Amino acid sequence: MKYAILLAGGKGERLRPLTEDKPKCMVSVLGQPLLAHLLQWLSLGGINRVLVSCGYRHEVIKEYFGDGTKFGVKIEYVVENEPLGRGGGIKKALKNVPQDSGPVLALNADALTNLNINDLIAFHKQKNGLATIVSVPLKSSYGIVDVGENGDVKSFREKPELPFWLNAGIYVLEPNIISYLPDRGDHETSTFPQLAEIGLLKAFTTKAFWHSVDTVKDLGELRNEMEQLFINSFFNSSAVNL
Image 1 (cartoon, rainbow, N blue to C red):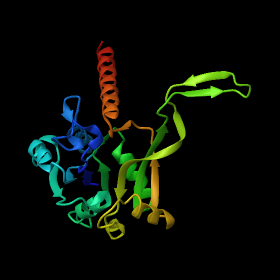
Image 2: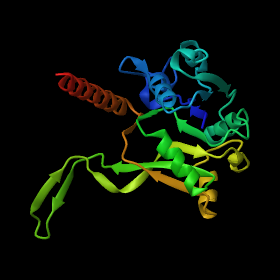
Image 3: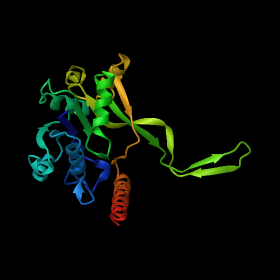
């Protein structure tokens, strides 16, 4: 796999005022735009051709990243003059990908993950679907109280994982999926249900780090988690050197 499509047209209205002058993917996490971290992840995973599907304040992305050379990738910008929706955005970007390129990674540019890309691609190829979606555990937004039959409180669990999986907004797509994608609209409400009915949609479940950013609260939580991961990594490496 060499190509990835990043859906970076989100206005991030629930992140205002942080997104008044830039798209959602450009909010800062540990001193860099969210999109910069995603590009580093793609580069480390062996993907060097990136199509950035963008619209709102796309010039901010172009000015910062240029052709992508400094970030280890080659970037091509696919600008929507009018909103096409995520499905329409993927379809327009796919038209710039050679049909013999093999599977294409597509993802929303508003979340961070350390998922192993090679494991994901291997799963997709093994299952022979047209599309594979990455699914991560659904975590409760609240603490859970376990209550016994007689009303006694048995235990408390702080934001535990629930027995459900959610769509992480990361997909592996075969180039010929383009005929199933809408010119406008959301692939998750049109294309994916259609593929599921005919057995061509697969799910790769993972407990790798994944955190999306929709609100200011989400951004704060992501920053805290990333800082903690960095601190843990720093002190663990120091202990090894000792």
